Structures are given as structure tokens and as C-alpha cells.
Length: 305
Image (tube, rainbow, N blue to C red; front, side, top):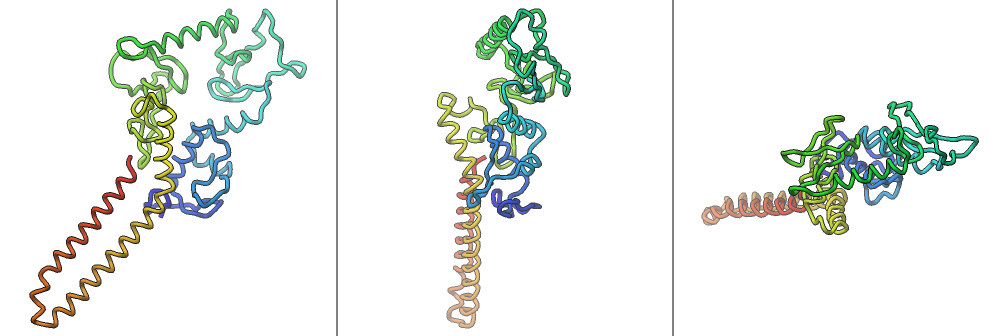
């Protein structure tokens, strides 16, 4: 049984502590850590203080999160002469006589074509290549575009940038759920974040989910919002084992009560004078089962989606 979601699933024990965590719960935990920029990720089991191996982390991440995780790893190891491709994050080292070139009138020497995705970009300003425009002018124009996109007209932004391919998309009608026409990425027009969802942890429309839109819950208090959502996620990850123990204990109590009632009925049935007292017992059993049912319902509210 998984220590997090309490469901019976095929489980491969964690290599560090051999505890049982299902693949689905492990993936959402690792994805959340990668989104926070964590490189050294601790085991999700509270009593284990080991860090998960890099191979374990990469194996349980989506392709997108795996690229981001490796990007963070490489980012901590490089110097200023190496930069990642703005599109695919492939690292390129630019050196001339052991040093980065000094600025000059001609900036064509900063033109880089990524060998992985063929994207052409400027090493100096780390932007798409801007033929005939120097870095300063390009940055100024890009700043104006971003400013225009963020302006609110008719109750909505002028445009929103796709979180993957970075192109600006303008919505004319419909809901906040957008699909990029260039890369088919699903994202929220309101906050610009990708749509993510995982059963038991909620989705982008959930108020208390770590995947939820920032405008759906405490938009003016980001620190409190992250604290509350992080606490809910941590509760689901770490308090679930305690709830499992409580559930097992209540189940054991129910078994004992049922057995006691059966024993009482058996003894009482041997005496004719006590037969009339047997009628209320089914009511007692029904009441006990109802109480247990309500307890389990209360427990389920501790794990809101």
C-alpha cells in the first residue's frame, strides 16, 4: 500500500529507505520540487533524511520536467562562457582565446545556431537573433512588447506568452484555457502557467492545489497562498500515513464491537426470558456502523482536492 495515497498499487520501494510510495505520488512530489528549482531532492518519507539519487529523479519525471531538472543541474556547474539555448536549453560554450568576446560594432560574432533544435540566438543578450538590430535596441523593443501584452483592456490582458515556445497569443473570446497553435501547450491565459493536474492533488482550477491558478486563491497575498497550498500538499504527502493508521484502528474497533454484539446475542438467545431484549441490538449495530461511516467522511475532508 502506498504511504501517501493509501491505495493498493504496484509499488517499487524507494532505494534510500525501501518505503512504499506509488509511482503517481512520487511523480507529483518530484515535479513540485523541480518547479521550485530544487536540485537536491529529499526523500518524500518524513523519517528518511536521504536525498534521492539523480537517476531515480530523472526516471520518475516527465520529459518536460526532466529537461528542466537537468537544466538546473547544469546551470549550477557552468561559468559565464556557457549559456543554454533559449528554446531547448542545450548548453553552448562561447570562447575566443579563452575569454568571452568584448563588445564591438559588429555583433554578428554572437550569432549562435543551436546544434540540437537549430534555433538561432544571440549569445550576448541571450535572446532570439536580431538581424540588423543591436542588443540594446532589441531589448528595448522586447520590453515594449511585454509591456503592451501585460496591459489590461476590456477586462483582460492584451496578450499572453506561451510558457513553452514564448510566442505571444491574443485571446479574442472563450475561457482562460488556451492551447498554443505553435507547440500545442495547454496553459492559462490569466496567469500564463501550464495546465497541470494529478488525481488526489488537484488541477489548475483547484483553489488549494499546488497546480492551481494564482488568481483563484488569495491573488493579493502570494506568500500566504504559497504557504497554504504548500501546507495542503505536505499534509497529503506526510499526514496520509497517520490517517491510514487511524482508519485501521477504527476498523479494528468496529470488528471488536461486531464480535461483542454477536457474542451477546448468542448468550441471550439461550434464555427465553431475555429474547425480548434482542430486538434493539440490530439498531445498536446500525448506529455504530453509522458513526463509523461519519468518522470516515470526516477523515475524507482532511484531504480536499
